[in-house]
Image (cartoon, rainbow, N blue to C red; front, side, top):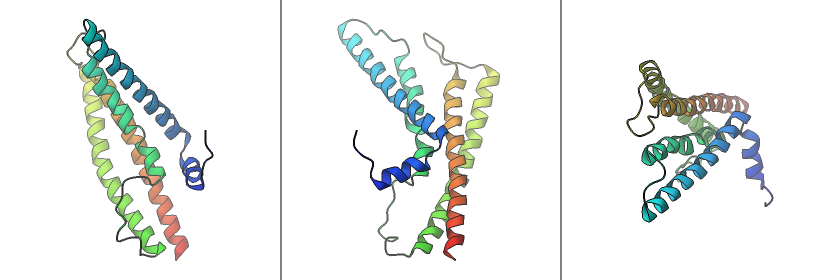
Amino acid sequence: MGALNSNDRQLDQNISWPERGLLVLAMIGICALCTTVTVTVVSRAIFRPLIPDDVLIVREIMVIAILFPLAAVTSGRSHISVTIFTNWMGQTSKNVLSLFGHIIGLIFSAFLLFAAYRLFVDAWLSGEYHDGDIYIPMWIGYGTFLLALMMFTLRVVLMIAIDYKSLQRDR
């Protein structure tokens, strides 16, 4: 494995152990996705599908693979961004924009978190499950979605505190 450059070391130091755990689960999820899709395609080509409810399983695992790394990406400020206008700004202006962006992100993630919580509780209380051969409970997918959003929202709150602190330091 190659040596870490300074940006990689900084990113590595920003990620907390729960975010690392979610990253590991996301990597396992990607491996599970690849395995499920490969086994399904090969088994359908040869005889009949070996994995029941393969489309449903892939859909549920995609939540893990896509959303679990979100908090770690946020901690490293690694979201896709357009910096054509901000590159010429001073550090204080960049900090103000970063704080503003994280506040807007918190507002949006709070709405998503509330909706995910309601979906999870409704699925848990109703005992609903997906139709199929193995009857996967719906609360599992909603629970993973809720967990990912909780970690993301917590990270956004921490980023607001970090941005505010750096803004205060600049003054």
